[in-house]
Image (tube, rainbow, N blue to C red; front, side, top):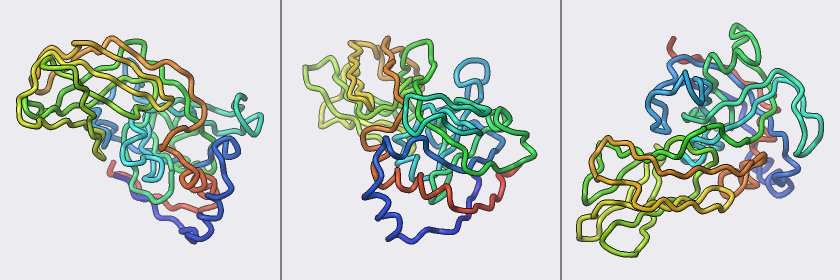
Length: 276
């Protein structure tokens, strides 16, 4: 992991900003961007990052305020080394641009961006090391296929444990229903982006149905899509989130996080690089 050291803003200042900033007013967001090697195995539990298909190795680790305890995992952001053409969406970016998928956490108190070398190279020469005050915004992902339900090594008939891959919008909630009855059970997401549902006594019965709520409130239901309770297996849910999103919504970036994003542009950072 890379480590970012910053000149911290007084909490009182951040709270004042939080009371004044709205999503629309804080667009486009500003952050500092660095880069790192070794993009696989990030904190979002996506494993090996696809370099041939989406996201084409173009990923970002994001600072703790933006990571939001893994709520940002799998979301896509567009980063621009230039300036936006208007103070709020919809509008175009004018500089060198890249779209990246969030797949990791950067342990920084600021919502900064640590990009894969390939992604950083779309904005500037990697030798630059640091880009200050780049603009960014959330965009819809470009996965052509469906959301994938990937069970972890901890999956068993009494404990459902899984990660959702390849979603084009952020995921707000996941519910699971097994074949034994009509009840939907809410899954809990941990800081590593892994969802869990524990049995209340009886073993779960396959097949499982999965209901996904995205960050815009859209609800997708995949009936009997998970045919087994085996660990380390992948199941195609047959559904995909598609609604465009250009500004944060829901609990991911509320007023306080938006204020942090605004404040981050005035902070000078020193980067201690990841192990090369």
